[in-house]
Amino acid sequence: MPSQPSSAPESGRYPRPVPLIGDTTSARERREDPDGWAMGEAVTEALAQVVAGRRDIRRYRPEPVPDEVVDAVLAAGHAGPSVGHSQPWRFIVVRSQATRDQAARLADRARLAQAEHLTSDRANRLLDLKLEGLREAPIGIVVACDRRTPALGVLGRATFPDADLWSCACAIENMWLTARAHGVGMGWVTLFDPAELGELLHLPEGVVTLGWLCLGWPDERPPAPGLERAAWSSRMPLADVVLAERWPAGADEPAAPTSHLRGPAPAALAGATDAADELLSPPESLGVLDRALSRIEALGGGEVSGGTLVLAAADHPVTALGVSAYPVHVTRDVTEAAVAGTSMGASSATGAGLGLVVVDAGVDGGPVAGATMARPRDARGDLATGDALTAYDVDLLMGRGREIGAAAARRGLVALGEVGVGNTTVAAALVAALTGATPQEAVGLGAGSDSAILERKLAVVEAAVARVRPAVDAAGSPGERALMALRGVGGAELCLLTGVVLGAVGAGAPVVLDGLCGSLPGLLATMIEPAVQSHLIAGQVSRERAHAIVLRELGLEPLLSLRLRAGEGVGAALAASLLLQGLSMRRTVARTR
Image (cartoon, rainbow, N blue to C red; front, side, top):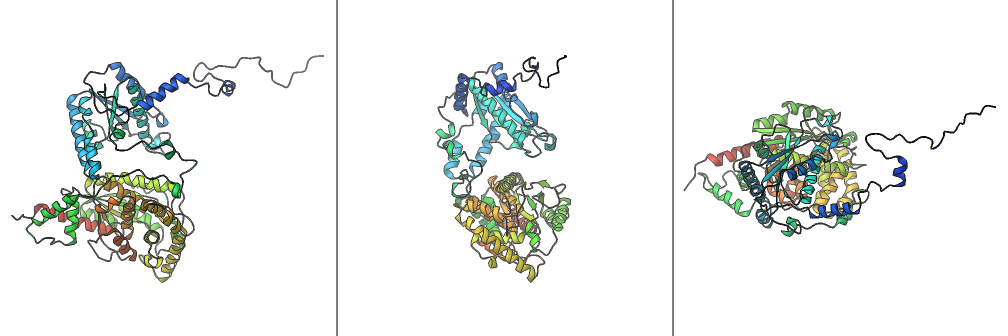
């Protein structure tokens, strides 16, 4: 009788097909030897030594570094991980003494400029730091990031557009460790204006630098990182920077990194006032404007002749609760008109001689064409029943705002403007949550509203404040209270503008506030970083009753009182025009003996 075919497959009869390229291991091998990919104890110990021994070298010997060592350092950088395997790095190797001297001059200038914004102790320590490595090291390597490919065209950058920059930072770390293993010193210098360094190296549009790497034999062998030895800071315990599962709230939340920002020195303020007294005019003849001009000049802005209006737009779920007289689409209409240069805010900026940056911080209906994008990722709440923003989006918006503010600061004054139907309700809730004002004191009529809308606004703000004030009051520092309030009742555009203020002030620029919604970012930023207040100028006081509360908290006297309801930064632009005219007058008016 013929045998019947077996239904079970034969086991172990055939060898496993092994690929000629790629991974030759089998699932069985990996299962039976899960740590089989390890390189051994000797390698891991050597790697730990290299990581622990990495130093930012400042002093260099003049002897040349062999080409094969330089090639090994560059090859290590090129072996780094990159988003979407895009390999965005470009390594510019500089050996010319003339170019290194020019770079050193740029760095020295940037170092002095930053020192002006630090406390006296920190400024002196910064100036003590040695930058001669730019001249001494025989080789400079500038790692540039080629960002000309749109983020949407690179796997992984559509959601994290800056991942190309992170990739280049990974390449630098590879280079640093490889140099250390070869006994070669490397120092990373970022005290540059990126545009100036890019111009020195003739970088095209869309290619940006990550600073300058000095490479050479070290003329020092520091046992610990230089900034630790200089008592600038100490390494935090690992336990302080490792978090379990999520970012903790309340008392367990990690403290923000220390800032050493300072306001204008008393001598600078006195000097600006003394110079104004030499004009052919009675002292402080321009009243409040004179004081604002002296503040700008004390900040080093005597040569300011322009500026930028940063106009942030966002919609708010709270409008569904009937707190505004206008339909939601008005936000998009005004934002699109601003992009076209025809909105009130855009026109006022043009008239004041200001540039304009329109930011879509969450306009309903999808991204606004032509605007700078800074939209929240997560769903937003209606204030009364749910948080306005997630912690992630607060960090995202403030970080993006810092970038926008720092870039705008290069043009001089930074004026704030906002667009958002319903945002006076958001602002009233923030004022009540932060200042202790009652909802009745904080809620105003708003543009075009009637008594019925006013009642609904008051009810919403009362519910919102009752929900968030306990958490805000329980927060530790003023900065923590500000962040807690932004999460609970903040608007996306106000959160972004808070970042704009911090970024602009960090770059040394004066910031001109607008109405209630255009002044709250100044208060929030000051709570986060107290020295911000000395950079703020109140452009106007509006008809919103809570605006006077905000200015009183800031200790600022407004330049204008025109009972404006325009929003959009109109008041800030008008005030900026006065400031620019006043600065021009101080430069041209005759002096007395």
